[in-house]
Amino acid sequence: MCGIVAYVGQQEALPIIIKGLKRLEYRGYDSAGVALIDKRGLNVYKKKGKVSELENHLLGQGDLHSTIGIGHTRWATHGEPNDVNAHPHYSSSEKFAMIHNGIIENYDVLKTDLKNRGYTFQSETDSEVFMKFIEDIHKNNNCSLEEAVRLALHKVVGAYAIVIMNIEEPDTLIAARKGSPLVIGVGKNEYFLASDATPIIEYTNQVIYLDDYEIAVIRDGSLQIKTIENVETNPYINQLEMELEAIEKGGYEHFMLKEIFEQPRSIADCMRGRLDAKNGRLVLGGLRDYMNKFQNADRIIITACGTSWHAGLVAEYLFEEFARIPVEVEYASEFRYRNPVISEKDFVIAISQSGETADTLAAIELAKSKGATIFGVCNVVGSSIARATHAGSYTHAGPEIGVASTKAFTAQISVLTMMALMLGYQRGTLTESKYVQLLNELETIPGKVERTLKMNPNIEAISAEYKNARNFLYLGRGYNFPVALEGALKLKEISYIHAEGYPAAEMKHGPIALIDEEMPVVFIATKDNSYEKVVSNIQEVKARKGKIIAVVTEGDTVVRGMADHVLEVPDTAEAFVPLLSVIPLQILSYHIAVMRGCNVDQPRNLAKSVTVE
Ligand code: F6R
Image (cartoon, rainbow, N blue to C red; front, side, top):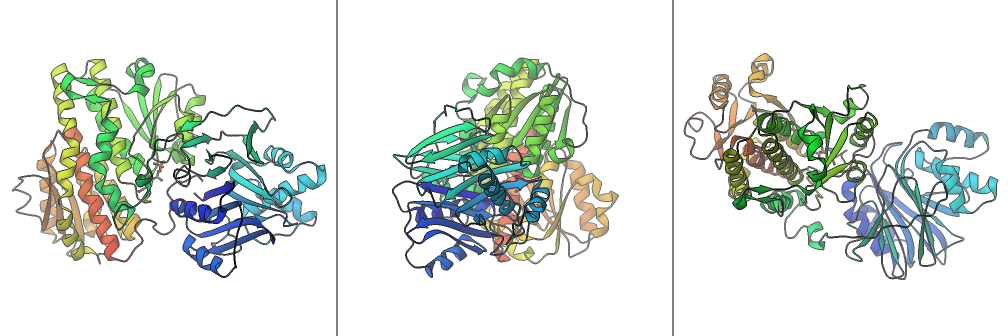
């Protein structure tokens, strides 16, 4: 939540920062701002709304030439979205300006103290308090700005990634992080700082992931990193593998549509080098050292939020079916505060696209403190969760820019499926022949997703019929129950239509009261163990005149005879159905949202990376 970008070097900073902010807009779009140092001094320009509003505002500011600058795109926490609460924030003297991603939990105490000593505040933000707190230390201790930052970081409680500029040192940026991400791109005599690598990739592929409690000082073309204990560190330079086109729309109207259509490739990428069905081999490098622990675990605990939690629910079915180990799937936000019973015999899997979700990170720390082994399933390479876990497997879905998660979900399920198959095979709960048969089937999934995507025009036509519905119900059983939850989440978050997902059989315990001719009900009724039961549920809805949209297995004639619309997915093993059945639901929510005029890539009030609890 909130995106930060900064640049210092020889190039014009403003275009680099504006482009970077646009790439980071998925992290928040309540306001945007930049600070630059030029002949006129250190100036802050900021505006409520998207980066494009800031661009318009900048047009009236004359020529803005600077080779150093900081920029911010905000997801509001403290204080409403307006110009004043936008970042950067000045110090009282206006000699310093700061951008901040995160939350300062003890800002109230700090603010009261500063106010008592004469400080005034323009905004309602914790970030302005943070800036002025640093300024106060700088003044009172008569120390350098970087020393003031270091001392301040010992006193603030919360999460932060910050970058500060100082009018008196126009070639210097000071940055620090704890809990919120910060990547440093290393160019030739130039440096790029950002919340993720997307603003950096077109300039350099050499990056440093700043660690918690580290301070980076870039001065006069050189970088120094030290801890807040003042110990200098030797940063490791990573090579980014991301391609520029992966973060561009590539001819699609929206990132979400592009990402839906990328799924045949992203699932194949996720399996590449891991699955070799011909030779009956499946290897997840990240699991190798932990297979023993995994195999002998008493219990698997999966923790995640949102869509990633839904992937965790699918994994519960997978692990219990194939490996016969009990699984618990926990909302990270509940788990972290529940005093859960965890031991060293538990194997904890944390799932996160961004790798930055605050609740998931806290759940990991808690489980770690109790001695459990933690395995991460993350998409963003080098992210905080990827680094906080003992081991992990990346999903390799590539950057997901649309706020609604699509390709990350199917990639997460792909990794979890491979983990469950490996585990079942090692534990002997899956026979060799069944294992090989499943590996062969898994290899066909990218092709089957491709076929499923061909329904796009058909789904678009159905969407036109239901775009004005006020409510939707999504029903599925077994492996398709989490898919029903995911379908409902996708619709509500981007179209703002109220939608609920339920296990189909639960309908008669309450939701059936909602059904009338106005209520579209999406059934996921593929041919599996619970097919007959779901067919009965469809009849119950039909008897009450509900409108039925059914996702069925290719060639199904029974449901076709009852439903108002059918969407066919290719036949596959029951355990792999979610990888196909979720696709039409993603497409349905996409078209409905577009037809309702919603901003599908940046839905209201949401942010891609939820770094606050
Ligand atoms: C929904 C969505 C969110 C995320 C959730 C967890 O489309 O994107 O529900 O799934 O905020 O985020 P990650 O996976 O980054 O931990």
